[in-house]
Image 1 (cartoon, rainbow, N blue to C red):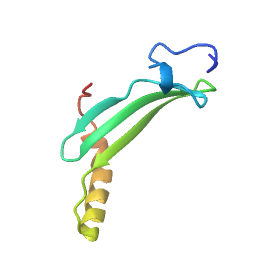
Image 2 (cartoon, rainbow, N blue to C red):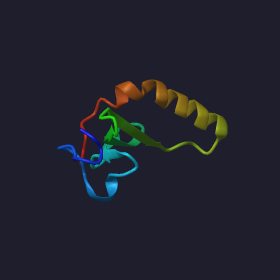
Image 3 (cartoon, one colour):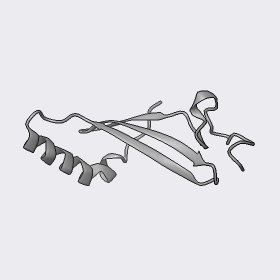
Image 4 (cartoon, rainbow, N blue to C red):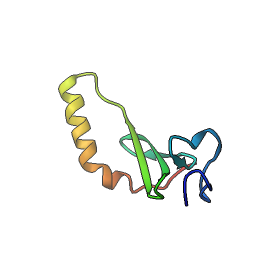
Length: 87
């Protein structure tokens, strides 16, 4: 499959495609104790598929507490991401 010839079955089409890739409709996931995760399936111009994962984490206003909280979240993320996706 070349990027310019065909969309994948899961491709969202329209403005989401471009820059040499196809992109699925993003899926929002509530991650308990963390915040929101957004998962997007991507296929590049060579046909390689990826999962793009973005996570939004609320941080304390104190800098040291924010760093500790973020470090804690990042080490626990694989366990915390074991949740059911919500559309």
